[in-house]
Length: 197
Image (tube, rainbow, N blue to C red; front, side):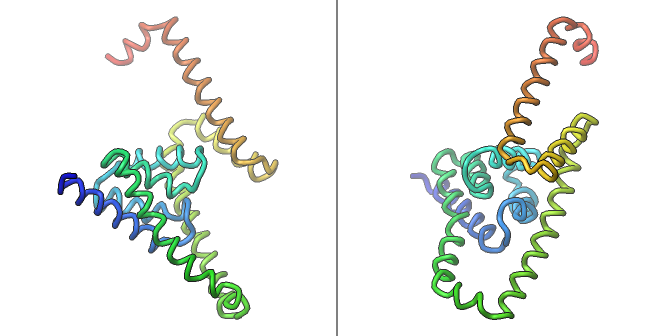
């Protein structure tokens, strides 16, 4: 294996070890750390790619953060890069959980520990709010996007529909939109060509 590839794999592994170690809450709460490390500090991916990875990671089985680390690793160094990124993301959690598993029952009995956990929950809620606003700014670009977002929010918040139904509905909606636009282009190609000019 080439030395440059080994260094790339090590860099991938250590980058995701750092992300996995210093972010609390997982999932969307990791977005600020992922953005800073992967986009601002290293320039490995773009903002749009990160959003796409999150969307696909949310739609596929498994933990979102692990899926994103696999996507980024694969983009950087192929299959072995995906493995390195995944291992880097799960290593801190594995070690910390193994250490905490022995003491978690006794710690939960202490009022100070319970208050600390409540404080962590509030911080995670703030992080999630920030991520939702950032996502909205990047993805809601048309009135149709906004309407679909509100429908999805109401379905989850009021109707209590499972998330997989919302995701499947979004996929079906997007496929229908592509099909409709393809038919419009087929019947009126001159409009599209004129728009490009």
